[in-house]
Image (cartoon, rainbow, N blue to C red; front, side, top):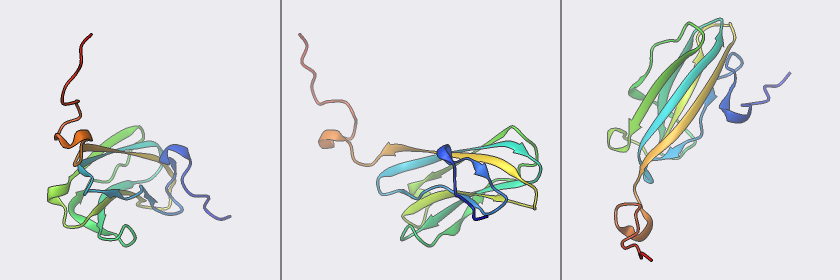
Length: 131
């Protein structure tokens, strides 16, 4: 049967094909943190960062990978700062290292927005009326 793709939350059996997050635009965020979780694991899962100029074709980020996770119930955290990347978009990819199945989840958190409300460089209002 055809691979139905990721289940809600980005979790699925990674053996049929790599699991990719969506691309995150680093012109809007200064840093992206990926929380990569391995649940049931009978194999070896490798998490790595990838970057793209067009959010279509991705290449691996130099020094953007983690060691293979070979045991269940483990978490790996990867981060990418916009000033350390050479391309606009970043994503995380999980790849199963052998034919055994593994359940994985990747949650991306974009941090430090480039543009803030009011253009003040911070999220607080310029003034607060007290009553």
